[in-house]
Length: 95
Image 1 (cartoon, one colour):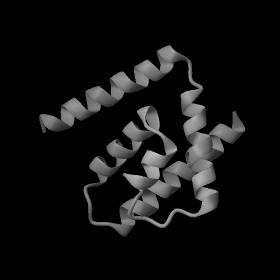
Image 2 (cartoon, one colour):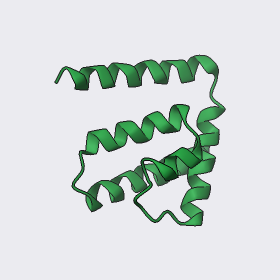
Image 3 (tube, helix red, strand yellow):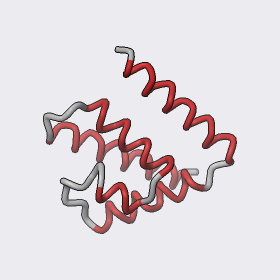
């Protein structure tokens, strides 16, 4: 469990750095990133959301491990995260 928390901290740190480095919509970046973590592949992270950043090998290894943790969630827990993502995306469309 400690390792999972450390990986989550790494991911959140990466979010903050990327958000500060760009002028793009922070919510859009975060939601794209989260969606890819939930249903995409690590390669899609590097080619899509993080494609314009130079992600070093250690960060890639951390993201791959984080993705593995998410993929290892119980199916019902992952489904609930997906429902939450859909709810949040739906509320942004109405805003």
